[in-house]
Image (tube, rainbow, N blue to C red):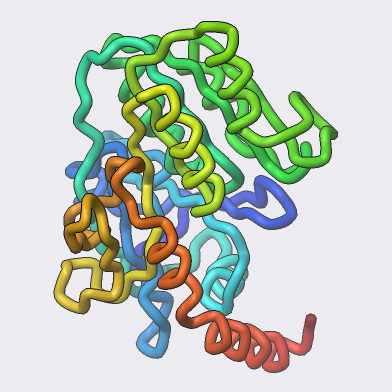
Length: 279
């Protein structure tokens, strides 16, 4: 018996949102945690951050980008189809409490894991300044959802098609140069984006937490695949994270480890496309 897809929509040309029936996970999950899914007996284990949850309905929402064989395969699933394995909640949840004014930055698909954090922080009595960005306007996701829990919301696009022409760091820099004061910063998105955010916030001595999506296999800390160096100590993002002090992360190592299986991932996707008869 698998986990049934109750709702599905293509929120961009590259990203899909699914609502999955998973009452036991919905009952326990908190903002910042993730699940690992496996489509069938031969499928690989893929981690996805929990983008939303409804305890009463017993549902968990995932948002993913079609980038490899397993995510392209999942994108083919429709309402009523079932996912074989849907394991969670995994990882440590966000637990900051009342801290003041928080800058929350989401880049690309990183907006999805940022949304439940923003909601939790706002419900905890914090003032939220959200900055979200994407390559172009049609790839911006969850804008209205983020706006509903933000005191201020800024949008940036790499090509200038919407909002500020630039990156999320450009908007944050403008605010800091205006003299805006923040008590903490959260960032989620591609590794280069999070590294750039941390470079900027370090200049202003602004505490920054990042959400690391390092390669995982089992999600319980046993395999060691997701290890990262934080503050010169080895950590495992699946059990010690995924949130870490961004100023302590060894970004060079994180980037190198993230590219370990690029050739194998490319080969698997090409084989999948040949089998499906499309490019």
